[in-house]
Length: 380
Image (cartoon, rainbow, N blue to C red; front, side, top):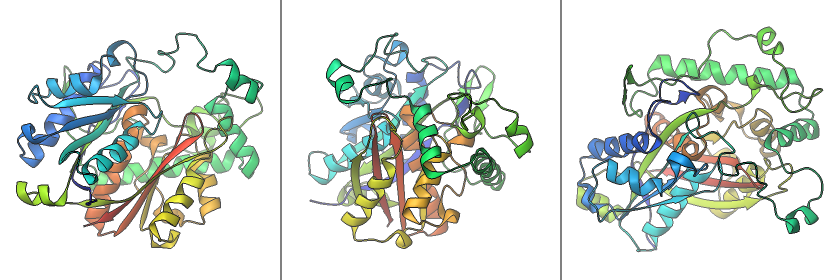
């Protein structure tokens, strides 16, 4: 087995629901990022063995194996294949795991991993069309209401004792850090410009400046009347795409490319599908055990902010330093384009590791069905 290294990572800006990117077909949005990734590195796309892309709502405009149609739209040769995968919110992080395994095992030399989701054009729930995805055998094992992520977030807040104020404070932190990172130009080197009828989109749309606990406190709860989860302390419905170029070190040397990070450890974990959102905790423990590293060895973390209780519970259980967690903001501010989020978080973390000379970074995110990916990257 050889190493799998990432030599480039690019993403679109994240658009708000019905915002700047909503007029772009999701395949075209993905094509833009793929074409930019190739242009950034200067490689001949003919060397790409496969494109592995995550997409959650594979309905309407996101059907037809969007990885393949996006690759063709990006101008890649017809013999460059593409496959679309769904591990819910972690789909494009899983795409990296598949790409890294394919490269490390010698089945391919060059693979693009990434994802896309246009939640404006293909809303959540489009795939089920009102039909339950849970069969009778599942319902017999887990009786009661069908699992719901929002209810799961409420359950986490209750189990770990988080107040509405604590969740809103964390949300304000996310927006403040994302605004500071944007103002410093932290994201400029990772965002692929997207041309729209209204102009070029290069800035994340969801960041809100000047929020207060008072303003967040006026928002109604969404999932329980007496609950704590609101639109203000949950991730945003978004549009976006991201992609990473993965290869062997030998292929990088042959192509004259400099590896940025290597995929050090990649694991999965499952947990109770009813609470659904707690698996990042055992996934992190599993990744640390397999890697031989401690939580204090990790210089930066990306834990997806699907809902504020998710990273807060993760912090409590892992004992990680909050200053290392999502230091440029998370999905509460930057948005959560489902199938593209894992690659978006990874792209942001890779650039941070390179720019700040951070040796190890760990990313994990909750996923539908009570699952989580966890990935440790090591700076090369």
